[in-house]
Length: 253
Ligand code: CDP
Image (cartoon, rainbow, N blue to C red; front, side):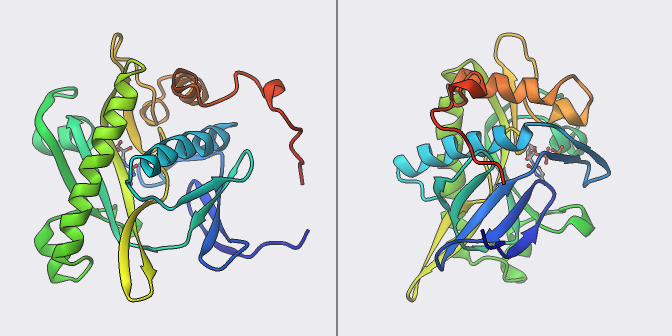
């Protein structure tokens, strides 16, 4: 098989040129990083779980009319997605206080927020993804006012969808991050949900016990990350219980 052209390699994923123009193959690695890549490890199976979980969430969003870049899953570690121009912002939605919000504002972790709060950070690892305001975004032209209205409404729709899906399996959606892409249909530009939605980019707590089922398990050394992600996948009915249940053998290159 001809080697595909690598477009970009990030901390947790590799992007390859897709089979048709306008498509990209997104490969999920097992690498875990935290604290702006100061902490690193390889967690066997994480990529497989995140590929499945992101497929599950993106498919659900597509079905309720929230556009995403997801086209189809190709195999255990890869999915075909629409190529898009990434808006250089990390869009964070918070329902309960955690992470940087607790540090910045001194709010106790787990405090329910009066309403979902949306924050924007500039996508820039060298600067540690700093929090920015809509004033910065408009002044520096990272997104227009119309884009920001659309991004806010997309973010809140994703929050409602994910919160509901999680609540149904006894998990609290504390916060999450999404990335937004632009795609062009001729002169017409549309914003879609891009990147991934997985326990790498969400905070998920068991409603009964408060147990953390997300990347904080890795950040804070709270146990096995694969066990936590497998628990999320099992509750959502996303992963076959064991690889013996796959209907077809998977070709290993
Ligand atoms: O996670 P951290 O404490 O560094 O930052 P945060 O601002 O509290 O993160 C809010 C949510 O966005 C968490 O669910 C993070 O996992 C997620 N996030 C992410 O996926 N990628 C980033 N670069 C920053 C935050």
